[in-house]
Length: 156
Image 1 (cartoon, rainbow, N blue to C red):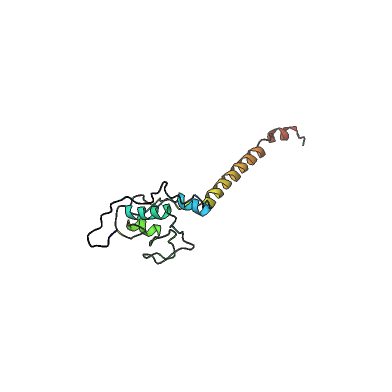
Image 2: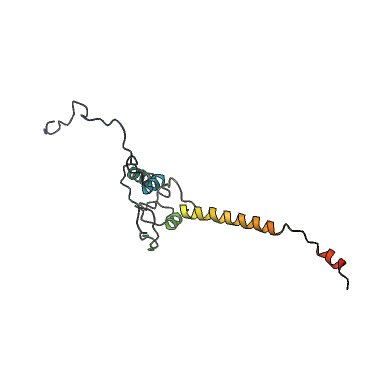
């Protein structure tokens, strides 16, 4: 290809064509990769959502190891990578949590607190325990005692 100014038209196609797309979990099947692939990017504008999805798709997304400081409340409450605001501040101000602009939010934040796998497992275990307690209490109440009959049979 000539370096002559203005002569930038290519006369042939690209030499090496990709036959398949890149798969970020082809060789890396770790728990962290699965979590990153399953992450829902909510509370951000369309452009930021596309940027985050690109990062996930091409294995460029790196999760935070510890919470970052929010630019609004100045607390260490930002738990999402590449975000500048915590969820409550972004929800209250109705701005994108990543860029901070007043754009249309594609997927709004859930009002319920974040659920992790551990809390879901704890809830299931607690439910099982309460069911067992209910069954045990039902078993305790199954006996039949007529207290009125014992008073009539006694002789004073």
